[in-house]
Image 1 (cartoon, rainbow, N blue to C red):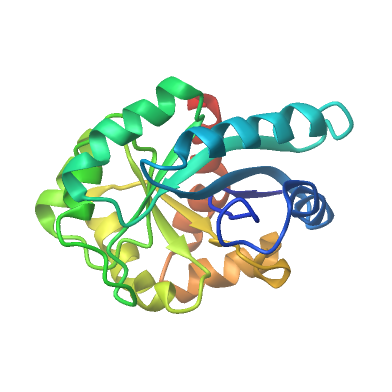
Image 2: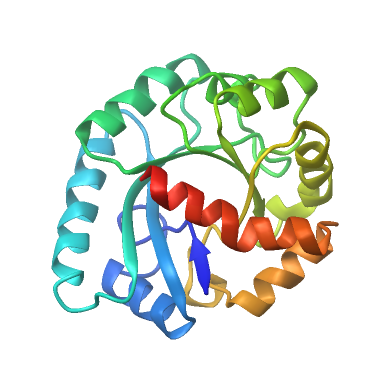
Length: 218
């Protein structure tokens, strides 16, 4: 069983239409997949509407996989994150991901902070280096942190795993899929987790318990 809460389609900078993305996820035995295209003020309404249409049509035919409507708030002004996350939820987004302060992109400082204080953010993706204040906020607001298989973003996976362990944060292994080859099966997800330094017990929570918990929230 596999869960992935961070993927992209042709609606932003991905290569796949929703149907092919979901079909490929089915082949890799995914239980659930979230479509979380890059969003800002200009396109979040359109993304939620299009992804909702895709979800409603696909579930008529494929009832063995859960498609989740989401957005990834990307490179937006940090102070706007809480308001944008609420707007996205109010419009129908089932999950809100924030593009965290990865070390391989010029994400504005304080992005992690404003994501961590938002009640409407579900996942802080590829967060880079998380400090104590942000970790405490993430814990308080029950926001999941991402361990990623995405090249470049995964440089700080070990740091994220250690912070999660220290502060009791909930971790997910996502792919940040943009292309067909980015999706991974459960066995490869285990390798990503072990490579980040997760123990077997932490890995079980990350791959099964926490995803199920997030699904219940949705």
